[in-house]
Image (cartoon, rainbow, N blue to C red; front, side, top):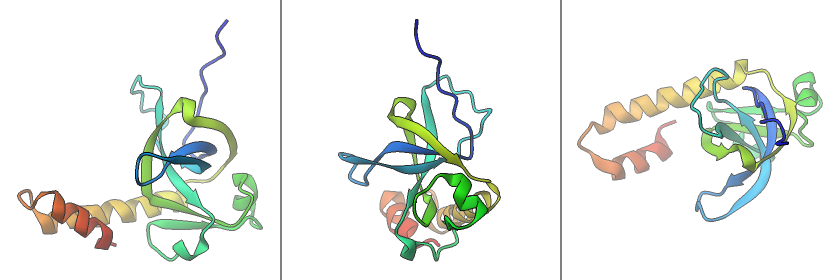
Length: 144
């Protein structure tokens, strides 16, 4: 008998094999599921954002600080104060998820995601359709 298919929900904090920016290596780290619960793609994958313990990255409109001493931090399952980085999204295969370690409310995360989406929209308006990938890559680093 096959084990039941995992059921991940938006707001779950998971341990996942998260790809590094070189896309050749990865490490197990916490991530937050941001994919809509009713997005039935038929694919065994889920959209997540990276969580880091490098607190100096917190001062950014697309990021949310999580203190483990707070009720939100305690429910998150995180072991140290951390930063949810909504500007670092990826799609991971469900088999890359080790387990759910906690949950987080999505209010502040949704605000940070909106900030990131608005910055991307401003970027697209500045670059225009004929500017090419160089404009997109250069401007994405400076959009926020």
